[in-house]
Amino acid sequence: MTDVVFSDAATTAKPVEILIAPQNVLRQVARPVRPEDIAGIRLILPGMFAAMYAAPGIGLAAPQVGISQRFALVDLGEAEAREPMIMINPEILEESESLSTREEGCLSLPNQYAEVTRPEKIRLRWTTVDGNVMEREADGLLATCIQHEIDHLDGILFVDHLSTLRRNMILRRLAKEQKFRRG
Figure 1 (cartoon, rainbow, N blue to C red):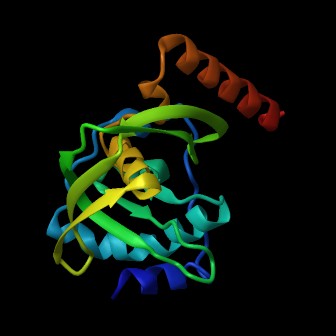
Figure 2: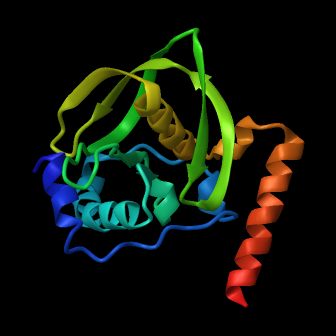
Figure 3: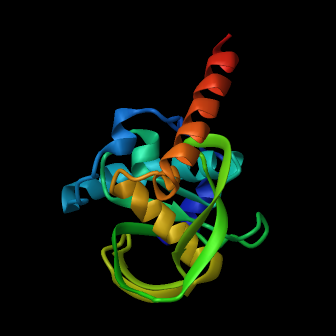
């Protein structure tokens, strides 16, 4: 199965629940995916894509849906031109010295945004659900998104790249909004 097949299945799949911070699994270092995990990953992928697209978002890591394993989805494409990537056990091999600052948000911190500075370009390696090892370079928004999702696999949220004051402001605002939503 290709990554496109999983994202196409999202049109009929029930979206899985995306966890909102603070949840312990969002702060844990996810364990590497093992061969025996692949069947379960294949089952949840359509629901993960459905949740990501419905949010709408451009990336979603396994810990965000309560799975402490090292895999994530990324898709910067529009609905009519999907470009899904499923990265199992992704690792950044190289980072550029040049940096880029972009506004980031997160499906686990809804409606919260901040400017985050990260390496402008990366080279990464990951395994596909079919077991193929892939390598590629990424820059711009794709590099930012991949770094953001790999951070999730390491128990890091985008707010951890901010000053303590800014991070605490965002987390307090999120808690207040969540409390208001619960009534």
